[in-house]
Length: 379
Image 1 (tube, one colour):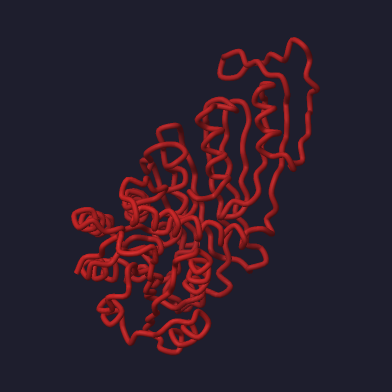
Image 2 (cartoon, rainbow, N blue to C red):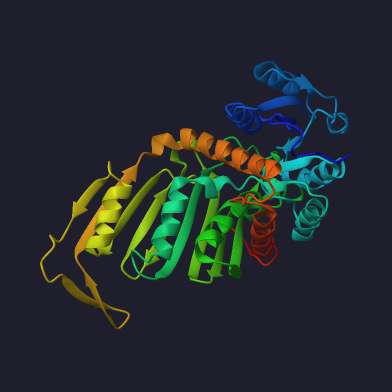
């Protein structure tokens, strides 16, 4: 069966996986006029039933029953990573469009297969790498490409995450189910920095295990990736209480730096040496920001040196904008922007999506490389 993308201005979604994030995503989808949730299936029937009562949709006994329903246009998959490839493959072969939670699969070759099949049969296939829909993502892209702070030098992402709800038996720790931290979680950030800095190449990676209940649990990983514009360090640790959970990423340039806060960035700090033109752009882009001018502008400007070159600037500024308490609101905005973007392509194939099958494949390629080449330590 094939789906006619122009058969109506309605998008009927069937959902595989009835967990907490799936419920959040479905609720976000339903804020878009024209979208409906046809039904849900989950290996735990009680979870599917609770989901259906909240969302107001039917339940299917299994994914096969969902895929056989001609009313389902698109399948949204929100199950553990080890199931993503096979469930996406089955949905595509049933003629359904597919949006899958990250990662696309546990192996890059599987993601490539899915992307190729979807392209050959005119179907949508995408992984929910939502970071590119963030307004701060676009702002950072502008700063990089217009060289507001000069050339990129170095970046890092530090993810100090919680394991408070990840009991030792949770599938997250089982590499056969999750793929490991780089694959299960790191793909978001490999994709984000690729969008900013170009294609990436793994330089080095390692992971640290802790002995827990006679098991090795890999809870800290780090990778160094060289992008076209420079190197970035990625650290992920899942080993602390929820109240201490925090994330920070920084991009260093030869005239300053940008710091973003939370794994879905909602707060930005910019510090650097800027021209009057850039200073005006900063004020226009962030009208409600806290802005400190450290060196009041002088008529002839300032002249310093860096990288053996002369640097001229008019103002040394620090700007802070955003609030980390806005994370869940921003999260919902990204999910809504993602589904709108993907649906626009279903209706009009000339539409250029912010994320597509290429993001799914390339982010997984770096994550799989980092996983396979990691040095292993126990501490």
